[in-house]
Figure 1 (cartoon, rainbow, N blue to C red):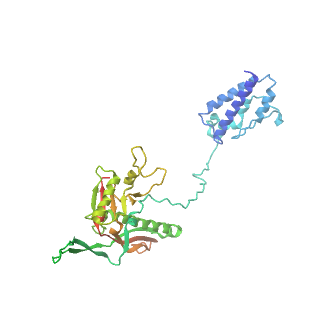
Figure 2 (figure 1 turned 135 degrees about the vertical axis):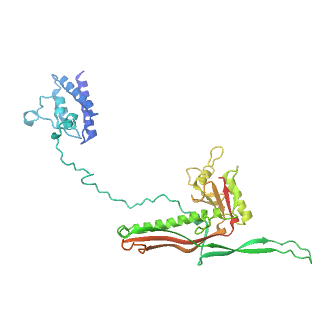
Figure 3 (figure 1 turned 45 degrees about the vertical axis):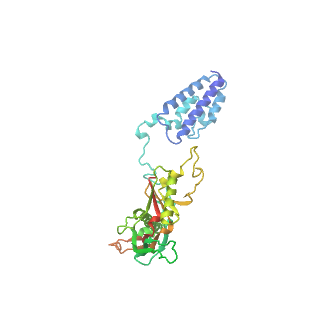
Length: 394
C-alpha cells in the first residue's frame, strides 16, 4: 500500500471511530459494537507501523494531534512532561490507553464492582422529577352531537301536559248542486289529544375542594351535564316509547307513513317518501333524518363512469337531498331514514334547562360534598303523524 493510500485509510478509520464515540455520547459503547471498534483500532496500529521509516511520520503525527472527538475528547500523553513532542507509542496504543476508550471498553465495564463505587444513583424517578405544567385543554369523551332537536319546531307550556284537539273525522260533502236540490252534508269530528310533560335529568356528586381549587371545573362540569340532558332529549324525540316517564318519539308514533327502499336507489326512495308526506300529510317536507353511516353511503354514490354525484371528494359537499336539509344523528336507527315536516310536531318546554347545586343530599354537608343537578321538563307532540314517513331498508 502506498503512502497516500495509508493516509487515506487511516483518516477513514479515525472518522469511523469518532462516529462510534459520537453516536453514544456520554453512554458507553455496547458490547455489540466493541469487536468492530477493536478491529478498527488494530488496523489503525498496523497502518501507523507501516509509516515507520517514511518521512511522513511527522505529518501524520500532526494530523493525529489535530483529530478531535466531539463526544469525548481524548487526552494524548506527551513525552517530556507535555512539551508537545510525540511519544514513542503508536496511534493505536494511544487510543487504547486513552480515558475515552477505557470508559467505553467492555473489558473495563466487566471489571470488579469496587472499581466503580456507586452508593446512590440520582435520577428522575427517585430523585428530582422534571416539572411538567398541564396545558388548559380538556379533551372530552366522544359524544353524539346534538341535531334532532334543532330540526323540530319548539314552543313553551305552563301546564304539566300539552292538550290539543285533533280532527279525526273529515268528510267533505262539497259538490255541485242543482237549483232547488238538497245540498250534501259534510262531517267533522274532533278528538282531544294529550301529551304529558316529562323530566329528563342527571346529577353528579362533587367535592367542594374541587370546585374551589380548580377554577374551570364548575363551568366545565355544568356544561357537560347540560349536554348529557340535551343528548338524552334528542334520543327520546326519536326513540321514546311513550311509557312513563318516557316521551313518545317519532319511531313509536302511530300512523307515521312508511316507504320501503326495495330495489330503488336510496335517493329515489327518499323522494317517494317526500311525495307521501305531501300527498297524505298535506305538508311540505323540511328535513331528512339519517344515521351518519346511511348518509355516508349516499355521499359516496357515483355514476357508472366513477363521478361522485354529491360532489368532488375535495369539496365540503352539501347536506341536502332533493333540496331538503339532511340532519345526521346516531339517535336515528341505522338503515332507516325519517322524512318530516318541521311544523307537524313541536317540542314544548315546561322549564328551560336548569342547573342547581346543593349540599343537602344525605351526609354531603359534613363531608364537604355537593350534588350538581341538570334537568329539563319537556313534552313532545306529534300533531300530524302522516307528515312523517320512514324510509326502510336503506
